[in-house]
Image (cartoon, rainbow, N blue to C red; front, side, top):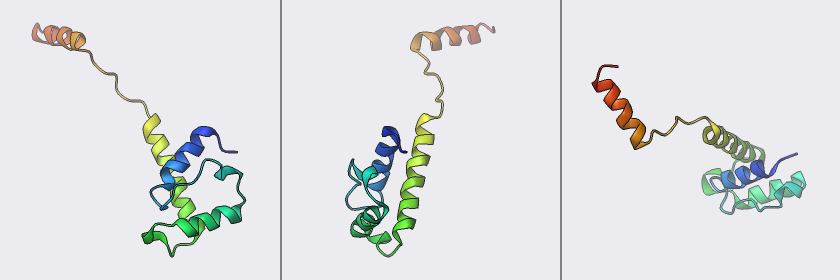
Length: 93
């Protein structure tokens, strides 16, 4: 079962491999219907690839993007914190 975030990620990623992105209801489709949509909408560099290969690329991009977006980012330093840290450094603390 695919959750809403995964669905959105797959739709986003599909736009990198298909001329028309997957629609919101694609998760209700049969495998045959999904394969046909991929074949009918494959971007030119992928038009001769089997639909399973294009689907794999879409899934990988969606997964990699989600992993990148959700990794912990460094804390933003405010101007006030920076000045305070700079003063401590300058004083040798």
